[in-house]
Image 1 (spheres, helix red, strand yellow):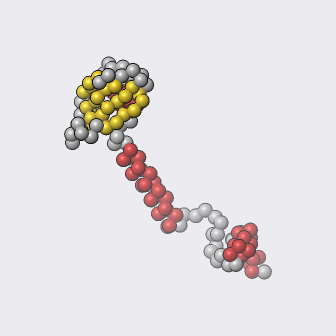
Image 2: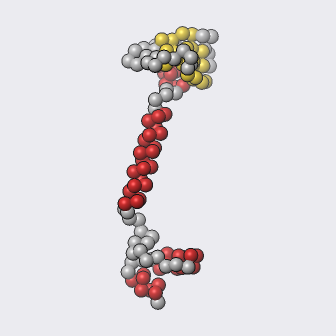
Image 3: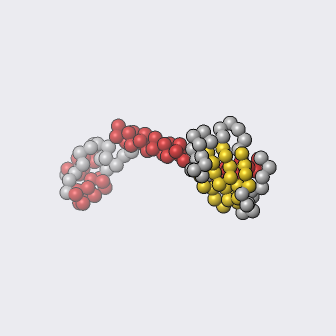
Amino acid sequence: MLLLAMSAFGVRADILFRRLFFTGTIPIRRNEGKMGFSPMRIIYVVTAVVGVAAVQGVSAQEPTKDLLAAQIRDQGYRCNSPLSAKKDVRRSRPDEAAWVLRCKDATYRLRLVPDMAARVQRLK
């Protein structure tokens, strides 16, 4: 009887039955089982979006091996298939990052300076 009365107020009977059978309680919220925009749901979504954007922002600061290979190819060096790129912390400076790029056919040391062409030195 209570199930019929609550389903008349907008609560789905199958949700009521499952909740009653598994937990022994009956939900009293009217929008049980419906998608709504509660304040907590909005906070969760905003937090997730900001978290994903922050992670992408951190990873966007470091160039990948493909980006470094494209940089030296634009400058006339040969690097068709990059194998790895490692930051040379010892040779890096605050505004000048040093990288060692291993390609299939050669290994290069790059110095990346903002708004300038990379300084490239062939190692092998």
